[in-house]
Image (cartoon, rainbow, N blue to C red; front, side):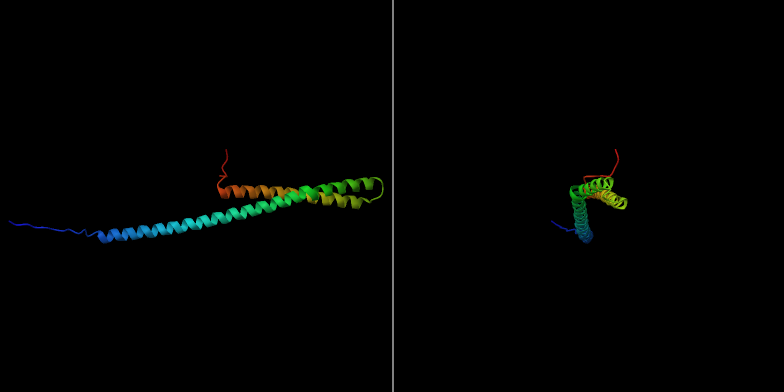
Length: 131
């Protein structure tokens, strides 16, 4: 009676471990890239939110105080000019100031809208595509 036993070890075992190490390294690299992307997105969101907040604050100040005061100054200057108490240059200066404030208000509104779009895009709420 004769008995034989054999044990076969696959020669590719070393390659399998090398493949596993390579896959683990790729996964670590992908995780690191995802963390970097996440940090960039969070930074972009924070920057857009701060920009929007600053533009909103400027718009609110211009709407609440500067623009109404400038309009009142123009009205008062026009009345004073009509009654002969004020010269034309003073009236024109009041109108010029009111126009400058109106321009600044429109710029603040535009800046706020652009920052809101930037924030929406950074958060994924806006794709930028058309209808």
